[in-house]
Image 1: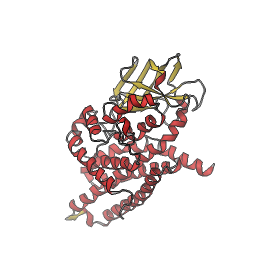
Image 2: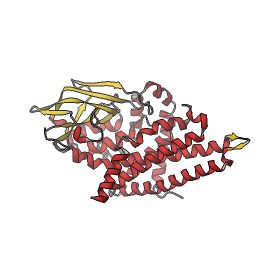
Image 3: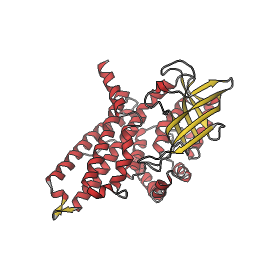
Image 4: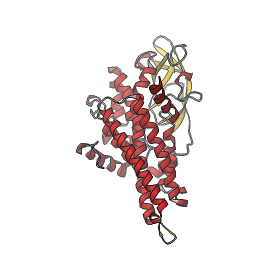
Length: 380
């Protein structure tokens, strides 16, 4: 069925993204995978192309367009290209809203122009060695020392952790237990006592630098408090719907692309003297995946429309996130199987998609957490 989500302007933007990927990303991506990190120049190139800060006001150097559908186009095209290492979605859709909605005028003028140009790469640091989905377990602390905070603690699994020039850190600013007493502090590159650990060796998304971060008596100016003091929990919950929707959009795009690749493969690959596509089992596998993708796409497009209109709630964002990412995982596994031994070879797109996409059911809130959110809303 013809999609109704995008206008001609969105499709024109899609062509811009595809051109950018072909020119600035794909020729270098294999090397970035070996290096474990993308170049800083590609971030600046993305800024020059207008791909960063789409929703940031023009006065700060952004695109001035809050329509989330443009972000959805970015997510779809980067996923189809198999290039998750350049974490523009993290930068634009997850960290950007914290800066634009919570930042003071002084903070916006200090950070947003670089955010939009690619001179400032961002990260958000929530996860700790002993605290993942459970924000109540965060142990990183920030003590009030008059005109500054003293930050101590460690974070792990931080995307953009090596490249980041600006890190939004979730820290405990009061001894009060639970999720209360958490604040968002912005730590900038070069701060004394701020150290980066190793670039973590993951099974997928090799070019996406993911690091451990350490804070040893880091002096954070009071003017780097983002949002309300002790208000981080509310701030984080407010922005999670968009984060989870962005992950879901990438997930369904990944599943659809794998289905396309595999459909072509089974038409061309022969076994027992005829194409695999002539076998009933293969046709049933393709039929099942195509149906699941079509149904999921319909729901996801509706969620994107709802979010663009400001109406997407946490429950439907959670539904979109867990269902789409679990579908992506299933499709990747089944498509790899249909490729046979070739599916296990790293140079084949299906193999890379299998490992790159596995994290989707984990970050941004695990499948189990998503189901808990939905279940509580229905059974409270």
